[in-house]
Image 1 (cartoon, rainbow, N blue to C red):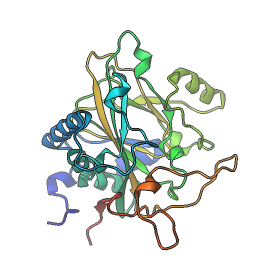
Image 2: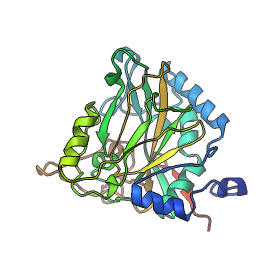
Image 3: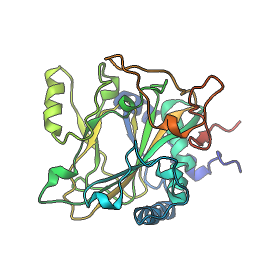
Image 4: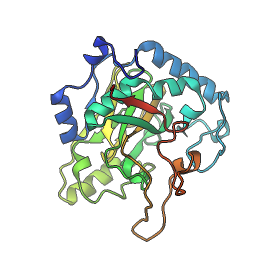
Length: 294
């Protein structure tokens, strides 16, 4: 069986036409239960604990310039990028074909590659709940040198997540808003303040929490504005964000509104094309997660 061939049981778990229409209208999708095997999630959890303890299967050529929590950084939130390139158990989750197949169905793409990934740990903090909030942002706003507006993120909690355990929350339909290219407020914990600003602009703000059972995954469009609530559950929250690019995505030069040339860290990790551009199809950094069987 090809790596990109699903079993009949897996095919039954893919989004149907109604789900695809919902995603394209609202900018998010919650998978059916059981799309990820429990053993795969448990292995990723174990790998994350070894990662936090300092174990690596491979070492990146850089240790700064990207989110890279270290043990000496304290006991607050932890955010580590490109963990799939450093720990085999997390890579196995990031390239699991069902994630790519669902992303391909939602975006209408023939192939899907990994773009980036983030392992995010949030302690529970009832005394200072706002410290565990992640602010409103759109992933695509951080990827200026990507040519595609069809990027998508799979958000994978490594346990069940209820509303008090810091679920991801989305502004439904915000991927269709104009003028959100600067919505990069990841560290701004005043969620209500930004929501009010959007309402003052005449936008319809519908906040939807992604409460999930273990084995479920939520997907959101690259332009969907999202955040996460405080963790007051009494238990830590551990999640894995798998950022995916469609097969058509490639590098493009990009300047911000002030005319400054923008680059993303991914460009440092991959090989270059003959013209010198970063190769966003480099399989060593951006492996293919799904390709429609011929």
